[in-house]
Image (cartoon, rainbow over all chains, first blue to last red; front, top):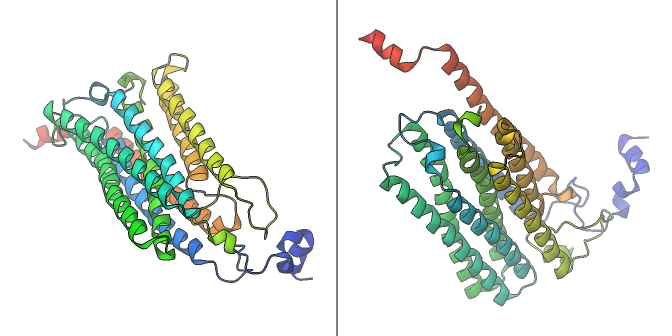
Length: 224
Length: 133
């Protein structure tokens, strides 16, 4: 008895004959994967490479955290009310982006546009709070050139902010494409990539607000 | 098949299903999946902010608690928003994710490890500058 036959005997669900024709198992049993899966996989690879880039910024920030060169330290600088507002904006927007995905799945143009608009407004609110925070830091002499700590801080958080800004542009083009061209398949694939991108940005923000803002605002004697 | 390809944005987190059977999706179950994710993510966010201020946790452990809460919330986001599931469709995504996590850990902890040892074992920069005078 071959190994495959043995596995099928142990687990009837593996039997190709029992699998509905055209259904994809991810193990090649149903033929090539549909394009939806392949598009998602390709973009997922890109997202992981983006996350790896962020991890390099995180590493630089962690290494340079104490290199304040006599300048302001993290717990003297951070205002957690801003952080809480930004977190709320981005978490709410990731939910409305999910609602937009469902609306696209159900081919509902009105709710697609509403959910995307709300997502965009929440993302814009996030950017506004971040820009105000950054300009406040620069105004009190804590700009990126002040110390290695602040350079790495602005590089990390600013890089995330740039990602969100680019995603907002992308969101605008998605709204326009849905409006002008309807729920064409190629546009739905683009939207799938956009929604993955938006959710991934929220994941990066989860790491930033916890490990940069909340840990940074702890009194220094509590940090390793 | 036609039903599956009607949904481009991954799956909701639902009950078990027989492999080969398309998922039974209804709008309320899908919205429910997102709402559950939103609720859990909100809870973990509140827990993070609470841990930052509380005196209930052993003070030196707060940073570690925040790290754990971060990992937990990232897991919630991956499952409920990015739809990384145990579905066979997702096998390749999970393998890629595992490799990504490996690289991220190597970069972050490797950098910290090397740089802390350098800081401990090498002469501080101001001393080096003095010797060069």
